[in-house]
Image 1 (cartoon, rainbow, N blue to C red):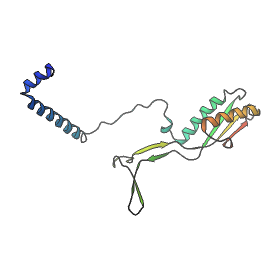
Image 2 (cartoon, rainbow, N blue to C red; image 1 turned 135 degrees about the vertical axis):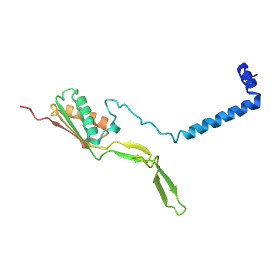
Image 3 (cartoon, rainbow, N blue to C red; image 1 turned 45 degrees about the vertical axis):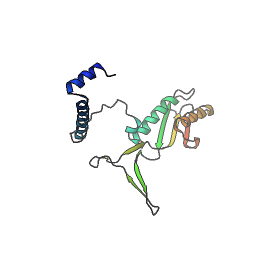
Length: 178
């Protein structure tokens, strides 16, 4: 059973065969418009950044400082820790992993090449991911570090939040301020 509006449309266009021709013509016109959109100039994309940038957008130094501040504010809340200072050191800077296309040749050698998006762009390769640098170590100075209990709590917090082993974390007593 056909819908009344479809019957009216079919009778206006002159039959079912003409209706099919119109639908095909509209489909072809749509594909042509999509193809032409590739050559139309694109407007510059404006993105409003949030006040706090994500870790992937910050430099390695800013990343270490932000991580240190976050650890500092948390450790300061540990019972008995008191005034706290934290320094985070990084093993290297952030790095970008690019998507590659691998091809194994008949002689057994492997040829890899970066997948390119736009050769005219500043960074034409397809970015797979951007990885923040590995944390090398954390130094914590706090007023209550002479207590083994506070040292253990602070070390455990840093271990859990950074994934570092205890051998890469040091907790020392802060010097007295005069």
